[in-house]
Structures are given as structure tokens and as C-alpha cells.
Length: 429
Image 1: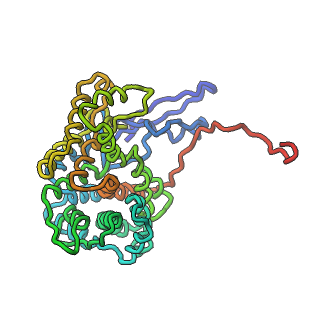
Image 2: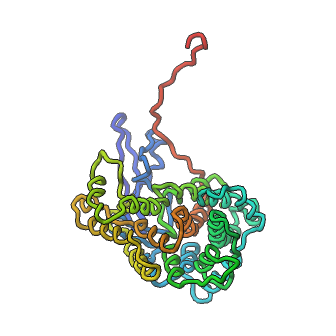
Image 3: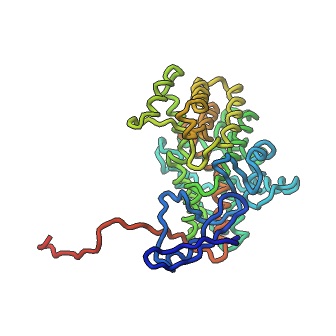
């Protein structure tokens, strides 16, 4: 809400305009620059949108300087400890945590949508056995509108929520199918008697020839990881979903665009990069050499999993995920990369180079070790991220579509190409 303003003066004309200051519930206020081009003829220039609020949202708040993350006002630490992932999904979609009756009903609804159309299975046969699972995820999710077009009126709230249920329920089934295709094993159907993450583990690791015994440690670890990844404000993939959806594209296409954005190594692929980095370092005895390489501006080597685009303090998710990592490794055996990871964390907390730059471990630092301990190949790490983030994507899409006067996203640019010139005839060129 605006109650103050800033006066801006154009030095070339002396003309002045008032730019309203809008205050949110939490965080820094923003300037409403809607009149800037109309009154002054100027656009703003903000590469990477580091100082630009692209929308209003009621879903997630984070404070990078304080290391705070909240979904609908609830601290991430409390949600990870006291709620399961589907309770968090209910919160993100509806704005409130479910009571006992609502929790049962919501979980039943999700279970009822976990199956995918049998004809969708043929899509996977079109991919090579060694295709990246994120490529399969992007293609198959984008095709869902061809199979589930009965509830695609984006202006109908009931249709939007039904689509949300379908996406949250079917993404794990699609992810498990992508994994099974990559290892040449038959697809496993979902089971309605298992939890959300238990069902995912069953679909990934069960085989027709033997019974699969679900491990509660793995089930709990994935559930908390999905909660930590459920949403993170206007990150690259969420902004991609919003921008794609602003054109009126169907939600499956918008989510597929978000998956493609998440695939990038600077975004969802970071936990995969952490594990590859630890493998490259190889041994604790090599750490000093690689720390020196990381500090050398001329060396291309980077320490992955340290620092964050927004957080200038500890990533609040990192401490939670570190504790989960220790629990998983107690069950699945010690991973030598864990010793490397812990030593690197010690350095980040003590070395002046890292402390001054606030390069603390982030959520990606430990998640890769957990996924590896559970037997996942590195290519599946970002797929796990996509499963958890689906609810955030669809909630932001729903929020955007329901806004009064919602407009298509259309950023402007600072043109630096050639000035106007005339086309010469072929003989004159």
C-alpha cells in the first residue's frame, strides 16, 4: 500500500513526477514506476532484475540478509519439522495449512490423480535410452494438455485447482518413468496406499520380480527435501512459468517451460554440479589446492554450492538439509564426499575470503550427497528438484492468472545496436 512517494526530476526539462512507494507485509518497499515512460519517456535498466519487483505475491517471502524463508508466513524451519510435503502443498495452494479432515481429503485427491494416461508411456519410447531425464520431463509434461484438456479453462478457478492436483500428483509418476526408461526397466504403477514420497520411491526402485521394502529414512528425507524446494519466490524458473503463462498458454506448457529453465546449471542443476566438484577434488588432501584455485580470478574453477543470488547470510534450508544428510548416511553408509563437504564448510565459515563475501553453503551443497546415497544417478538430481518445486510453479501461475487486469509480460530493453541506416542496392554493397 502506498502512503509516501519520491519526487523525480528530469534534469533536461525540470519536469517532476511523483513515484509512489508501495509497502508490502515484509521486506523492502518498492517504487511504482508505471508513469515513468509515459511522463518522462524513460525505461529503467536492471540486468538480471536484481532490483526489480516483477509482481505482487502472497506466497513466499525471503530475506537474503537475515537468512529468512517463509511460505504464507510460516518459517521454513517449522514447516520442515512439523508438516509433511502435501500439507505444505495445501498451504501454498490455498493459503492455509489443512486441519485433520482437510489433510485426509487433500491426500486422497492427490492419490486419485497419480496415474498417467497409458498412451503417454509411448512418449518415453521416443527418447534414447541415454536421454537426460530433464529432457523427458520437459517433453512429457508439455504434452499433458493433449491428454487432460477437459479442465483447461484458465479463467475457471475450479479448472485451475484441478490442474494443480493433476500436476502435483503426476509429476512423480512421470519422473519415475523417466528414470525407469533410462535404466531399461519396466514402468511401475503408483500405489494409493503409500505416502507421496513413499510412492515415488516405490515407482523408482520396485521391480516386478521382487518386493520393494520402503525405507522410512529415505521416505522422510525426500519429503523434507521437497518441502525445502517447494517455492523460492521469483527465481528464474518461477518467473519463466509466470511469463509463459501470462500469454494465456495452458498451464502444462507453462510448467514445462519452468522445468526447462530449472535444468540450467546455475539454477536447479547446481546440486549435480556440487557432486561433480567433490568428485573432482577427490580427497581432503587436495582441498587447499582447490581453495586456491577458487580464489584465483584467472582460474575457471568454482566452488559449487556456496553463496546464493539472494541470500547474503546462511541459506536457512542448508542447516536443515545438513542434518538430514547425516541421518541418511547413518543408514546408507558413510560417503567419503561427506568428509570433503564438511571440511569445505569449515573453510567457508573461517576463511576471510569466504566470510567477507558471505559465501556460505546453500541448499544445493548437501542435497546431491543425499540423492547419491539413495542410489540416484546425478542426472536425476534436478528432476527431484522439479518434483518439489511443481507446487510453487502452479501456485504462482494461479495467482498471476487470477489477478484483475492481468497482462502479458513484456519487458523492454536498452537498444545498443546500429543507428538507423539505409539498405544499399546489391551493386552498392
